[in-house]
Image 1 (cartoon, rainbow, N blue to C red):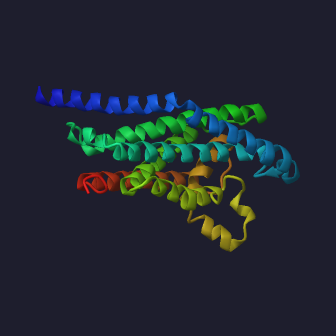
Image 2 (image 1 turned 45 degrees about the vertical axis):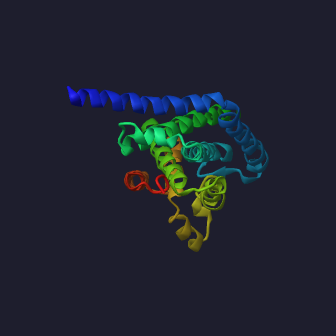
Image 3 (image 1 turned 180 degrees about the vertical axis):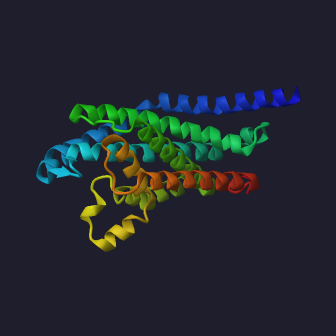
Length: 261
């Protein structure tokens, strides 16, 4: 009976975190859902319509079709990360993280709640960018399970990345440093706009050290059936990153790093 009562408390606590995160996303939809749609539209107009005509085909597909999965994944990565880092750091900054810490919730469940919020925003933004995509080009879906699996794992990985950043951040500048100087370059050099087969050998070798390359190409393979990497290996990398980062973040929470200091 005691176990059932504890499980119920934990379930309610988890649902509360997720509902709060969802409510936050919808309440400020002008900041969470509209900017990715505008950005995607500009990318399609400039890179797809104007520059794409000069590029022609890439990977056997019209350049705009080739570009579409990369733009969707770029939006998912940025927004999954941004949602968790801003939300959890906001909880630290506003001191209401203490309410969670004194609640009968294990740290792993708190982490899952925030990750679920990041996943929700990532999927919502991905759906918005996909809707924008369909105004510009037709994108076939060759392997729907690969599409779903890759976007899920990628969103989880970067939600955990946002949580990791928020744990160590001591001010708002520190939550923008990593996205600006690390995450954005990795995204742009991760095969979003091009195939790595076009690069010289030394640049290809560097690209294969970029984990985002595997995420983008697994997602693109789900849509178009073409990829610069083996999709199975890409899923192995994504799964390993998700498990490792979850373990690290929970361990940091258990130690009270960045929270009880």
